Length: 107
Figure 1 (spheres, one colour):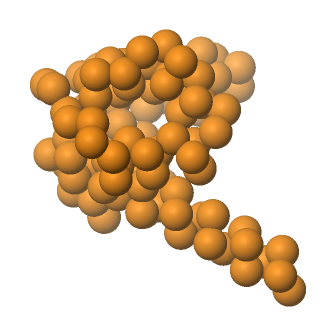
Figure 2 (cartoon, rainbow, N blue to C red):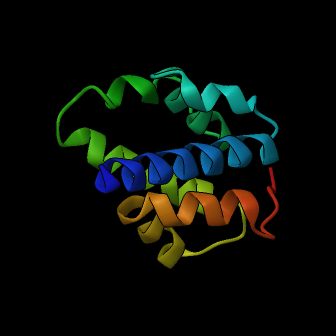
């Protein structure tokens, strides 16, 4: 029971962090709730072509493209490679930091 509550709290925190990140980048926050569309919005934030979404359906290739996309998102918010690694490995920490923190989106 307690584990389920903690898990739910983490999920809500991540969704809120991604929602705020999307809004900071000028995208609709509610888009973070829609599967596949949220990946498309992330490609737009990273200023990558929309066809990148297709690459997320290919096993192993999706890992490479996700890392590249997170790297571009981190750069757009003035962050470095360390932040990229954080977004990739600990999104439940780094997306809320990005969304609710001081970082601003630079198109």
